[in-house]
Amino acid sequence: MSDVLVIIPAYNEEKSIFQTVTKLRNYNDYDYIVINDGSKDSTEAILHHNELPYINLPVNLGIGGAMQTGFRYARKKGYKYAIQLDADGQHDPNDLQMLVDAIQLGNQDMIIGSRFVEKSQYKGSSVRRVGIYYFYYLILFLTGNKITDPTSGYRIINKEIIKEFANYYPVDYPEVEVLVDLAKKKFSVKEIKVEMNNRQGGTSSITPVKSIYYMIKVSFFSLIRRVL
Image (tube, rainbow, N blue to C red; front, side, top):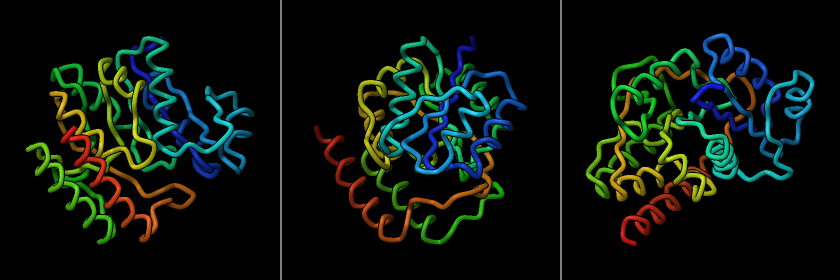
């Protein structure tokens, strides 16, 4: 058993899940668990047929519920570190070792794989970049921390934060909110450069309308969590 668990939340990822897991296993020997978040396509059938380790959620809980399930599993099994790796292939498993090295050698509580802390090949839409810049300044205002890629889900956390997230994790759009909460609790966060790929299949759940809802909701709850 490794002391690192890679958590792969998956919702309707039949086009990419097997490729994502295969790439992960080709790059390293870390333990992993797929959280099948109530998928309505053949994601579960692919996992079962290929005998891949997974937890099946009977209903869709969203990214927050899926990740909290993974964090609870990590805590129960005693892992020292947990990493989120998206099932759609956007996160490059080749960068996993850099995340692990950074948290083991740097005495940090969380390491974020960032597209912007250094120049990378990432080319996002203008709408997505506006949202990222907005949350950068929101976090800077609320915490004083400069997080260049606050919406990146490519993160590794240590045992203390695994415990925190197993007890509470936002239901949806958790990335920004937890950064504000961790800053309040004096946990340390650092960014390192990673590369992000285009989705290998499926479609993003973030539509323009949801983006507006996302910004309003996250801003409100981040403000509340900072004050309380």
